[in-house]
Image (cartoon, rainbow, N blue to C red; front, side, top):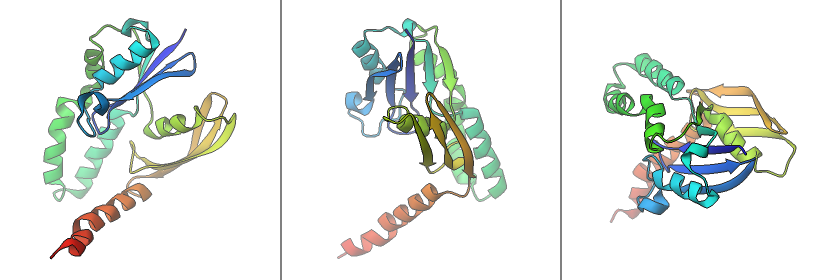
Length: 202
Protein backbone atom coordinates (compact mmCIF):
# COMPACT_ATOMS: atom_id res chain seq x y z
CA UNK A 1 0.00 0.00 0.00
CA UNK A 2 1.19 3.53 -0.84
CA UNK A 3 -0.50 6.40 0.99
CA UNK A 4 0.14 9.99 -0.11
CA UNK A 5 -1.20 12.99 1.79
CA UNK A 6 -1.40 16.28 -0.11
CA UNK A 7 -1.53 19.53 1.84
CA UNK A 8 -2.39 23.09 0.87
CA UNK A 9 -1.88 25.67 3.64
CA UNK A 10 -0.61 29.06 4.78
CA UNK A 11 -2.03 31.06 1.87
CA UNK A 12 -5.79 30.65 1.48
CA UNK A 13 -8.40 27.88 1.58
CA UNK A 14 -6.25 25.27 3.35
CA UNK A 15 -7.13 21.69 2.48
CA UNK A 16 -5.93 18.10 2.48
CA UNK A 17 -6.34 15.16 0.12
CA UNK A 18 -5.37 11.54 0.61
CA UNK A 19 -4.47 9.18 -2.24
CA UNK A 20 -4.10 5.46 -1.50
CA UNK A 21 -2.66 3.18 -4.21
CA UNK A 22 -3.43 5.77 -6.87
CA UNK A 23 -7.06 6.31 -5.89
CA UNK A 24 -8.46 9.36 -4.12
CA UNK A 25 -9.52 8.12 -0.69
CA UNK A 26 -10.63 11.42 0.83
CA UNK A 27 -10.39 15.21 0.50
CA UNK A 28 -11.52 18.03 2.77
CA UNK A 29 -11.23 21.79 3.16
CA UNK A 30 -10.27 23.20 6.58
CA UNK A 31 -12.94 25.91 6.60
CA UNK A 32 -15.64 23.20 6.71
CA UNK A 33 -14.46 22.30 10.20
CA UNK A 34 -13.35 25.65 11.63
CA UNK A 35 -16.16 27.69 10.02
CA UNK A 36 -13.58 30.36 9.09
CA UNK A 37 -14.08 31.41 5.48
CA UNK A 38 -10.89 30.83 3.43
CA UNK A 39 -9.08 29.49 6.51
CA UNK A 40 -5.33 29.54 5.77
CA UNK A 41 -4.09 27.68 8.87
CA UNK A 42 -2.52 24.23 8.79
CA UNK A 43 -5.45 21.92 7.87
CA UNK A 44 -5.28 19.77 10.99
CA UNK A 45 -9.00 18.96 10.96
CA UNK A 46 -9.00 18.21 7.22
CA UNK A 47 -5.98 15.90 7.60
CA UNK A 48 -7.61 14.09 10.52
CA UNK A 49 -10.82 13.70 8.52
CA UNK A 50 -8.98 12.25 5.51
CA UNK A 51 -7.04 9.77 7.65
CA UNK A 52 -10.18 8.77 9.51
CA UNK A 53 -12.08 8.23 6.25
CA UNK A 54 -9.32 5.94 4.96
CA UNK A 55 -8.80 4.18 8.30
CA UNK A 56 -5.15 5.24 8.47
CA UNK A 57 -2.86 6.86 11.02
CA UNK A 58 -0.08 9.41 10.29
CA UNK A 59 2.63 6.77 10.75
CA UNK A 60 1.14 4.81 7.83
CA UNK A 61 1.73 7.63 5.35
CA UNK A 62 4.48 7.12 2.78
CA UNK A 63 4.60 10.69 1.44
CA UNK A 64 3.35 14.10 2.50
CA UNK A 65 3.27 16.55 -0.42
CA UNK A 66 3.10 20.35 -0.27
CA UNK A 67 1.87 22.29 -3.30
CA UNK A 68 4.87 24.56 -3.96
CA UNK A 69 8.59 25.07 -3.31
CA UNK A 70 8.77 27.70 -0.55
CA UNK A 71 12.47 28.55 -0.89
CA UNK A 72 12.15 29.20 -4.63
CA UNK A 73 9.09 31.39 -3.99
CA UNK A 74 10.96 33.31 -1.28
CA UNK A 75 13.81 33.89 -3.74
CA UNK A 76 11.34 35.44 -6.20
CA UNK A 77 9.87 37.70 -3.52
CA UNK A 78 13.30 38.96 -2.45
CA UNK A 79 14.42 39.60 -6.04
CA UNK A 80 11.18 41.42 -6.82
CA UNK A 81 11.33 43.64 -3.73
CA UNK A 82 14.97 44.48 -4.43
CA UNK A 83 14.20 45.34 -8.05
CA UNK A 84 11.48 47.81 -7.05
CA UNK A 85 13.01 49.18 -3.83
CA UNK A 86 12.16 51.40 -2.09
CA UNK A 87 8.62 51.41 -3.56
CA UNK A 88 7.74 47.99 -2.14
CA UNK A 89 9.06 48.67 1.36
CA UNK A 90 5.63 48.76 3.01
CA UNK A 91 4.57 45.47 1.42
CA UNK A 92 7.98 43.93 2.16
CA UNK A 93 7.78 44.91 5.84
CA UNK A 94 4.43 43.11 6.09
CA UNK A 95 5.51 40.00 4.19
CA UNK A 96 8.95 39.34 5.68
CA UNK A 97 7.86 38.59 9.28
CA UNK A 98 5.36 36.00 8.01
CA UNK A 99 8.09 34.27 6.00
CA UNK A 100 10.64 34.39 8.80
CA UNK A 101 8.11 33.11 11.35
CA UNK A 102 6.28 30.43 9.37
CA UNK A 103 6.76 29.98 5.64
CA UNK A 104 10.51 29.29 5.64
CA UNK A 105 9.94 26.50 8.16
CA UNK A 106 7.19 24.56 6.44
CA UNK A 107 8.90 21.22 6.99
CA UNK A 108 8.76 21.79 10.74
CA UNK A 109 5.19 23.15 10.58
CA UNK A 110 3.98 20.10 8.65
CA UNK A 111 5.61 17.68 11.07
CA UNK A 112 4.13 19.59 14.01
CA UNK A 113 0.74 19.55 12.32
CA UNK A 114 0.99 15.77 12.14
CA UNK A 115 2.09 15.68 15.79
CA UNK A 116 5.51 14.41 14.72
CA UNK A 117 4.00 10.96 14.32
CA UNK A 118 4.85 10.20 10.71
CA UNK A 119 7.77 8.53 8.97
CA UNK A 120 6.58 9.89 5.62
CA UNK A 121 8.95 11.55 3.19
CA UNK A 122 8.11 15.26 2.75
CA UNK A 123 7.96 16.43 -0.88
CA UNK A 124 7.63 20.02 -2.14
CA UNK A 125 6.37 20.09 -5.72
CA UNK A 126 6.41 22.87 -8.30
CA UNK A 127 3.24 24.96 -7.99
CA UNK A 128 2.15 24.58 -11.61
CA UNK A 129 2.92 20.85 -11.55
CA UNK A 130 0.50 20.68 -8.61
CA UNK A 131 -2.20 22.41 -10.66
CA UNK A 132 -1.51 20.14 -13.63
CA UNK A 133 -1.59 16.99 -11.49
CA UNK A 134 -4.89 17.94 -9.86
CA UNK A 135 -6.49 18.14 -13.32
CA UNK A 136 -4.76 15.39 -15.28
CA UNK A 137 -4.46 12.48 -12.84
CA UNK A 138 -8.18 12.33 -11.88
CA UNK A 139 -9.16 12.73 -15.55
CA UNK A 140 -10.22 9.76 -17.73
CA UNK A 141 -7.45 10.49 -20.25
CA UNK A 142 -4.32 8.38 -20.68
CA UNK A 143 -2.64 11.28 -22.46
CA UNK A 144 -3.52 14.98 -22.69
CA UNK A 145 -2.16 18.45 -23.43
CA UNK A 146 -1.96 20.54 -20.26
CA UNK A 147 -2.30 24.31 -19.83
CA UNK A 148 -2.09 25.96 -16.39
CA UNK A 149 -2.79 29.66 -15.85
CA UNK A 150 -2.36 31.22 -12.42
CA UNK A 151 -1.35 34.50 -10.79
CA UNK A 152 2.12 33.20 -10.04
CA UNK A 153 3.67 30.12 -8.49
CA UNK A 154 7.37 30.16 -7.74
CA UNK A 155 8.34 32.02 -10.95
CA UNK A 156 5.94 30.50 -13.49
CA UNK A 157 2.60 32.17 -14.22
CA UNK A 158 1.49 30.02 -17.17
CA UNK A 159 2.74 26.58 -18.20
CA UNK A 160 2.18 24.28 -21.15
CA UNK A 161 2.98 20.59 -21.22
CA UNK A 162 1.83 17.00 -21.62
CA UNK A 163 0.49 14.37 -19.30
CA UNK A 164 0.95 10.70 -20.20
CA UNK A 165 0.27 7.72 -17.97
CA UNK A 166 1.56 8.60 -14.52
CA UNK A 167 3.90 11.38 -15.66
CA UNK A 168 3.56 15.12 -16.31
CA UNK A 169 6.08 17.23 -18.20
CA UNK A 170 5.68 20.99 -18.39
CA UNK A 171 7.83 22.22 -21.27
CA UNK A 172 6.90 25.89 -21.82
CA UNK A 173 6.74 28.53 -19.10
CA UNK A 174 5.64 32.15 -18.95
CA UNK A 175 7.57 33.81 -16.13
CA UNK A 176 6.72 36.47 -13.56
CA UNK A 177 6.01 39.41 -13.86
CA UNK A 178 4.18 38.51 -17.12
CA UNK A 179 0.91 37.03 -15.91
CA UNK A 180 -2.64 36.71 -17.22
CA UNK A 181 -3.74 35.77 -13.70
CA UNK A 182 -2.28 38.92 -12.15
CA UNK A 183 -3.80 41.04 -14.93
CA UNK A 184 -7.18 39.49 -14.14
CA UNK A 185 -6.65 40.12 -10.40
CA UNK A 186 -5.65 43.74 -10.99
CA UNK A 187 -8.68 44.36 -13.20
CA UNK A 188 -11.18 42.77 -10.80
CA UNK A 189 -9.63 44.63 -7.83
CA UNK A 190 -9.90 47.92 -9.72
CA UNK A 191 -13.47 47.16 -10.78
CA UNK A 192 -14.63 46.16 -7.28
CA UNK A 193 -12.88 48.99 -5.41
CA UNK A 194 -13.03 51.89 -7.86
CA UNK A 195 -15.79 51.29 -10.41
CA UNK A 196 -18.50 49.29 -8.62
CA UNK A 197 -18.85 51.72 -5.66
CA UNK A 198 -19.72 54.49 -8.15
CA UNK A 199 -22.89 52.59 -9.12
CA UNK A 200 -23.86 52.14 -5.47
CA UNK A 201 -23.18 55.70 -4.36
CA UNK A 202 -26.26 57.83 -3.53
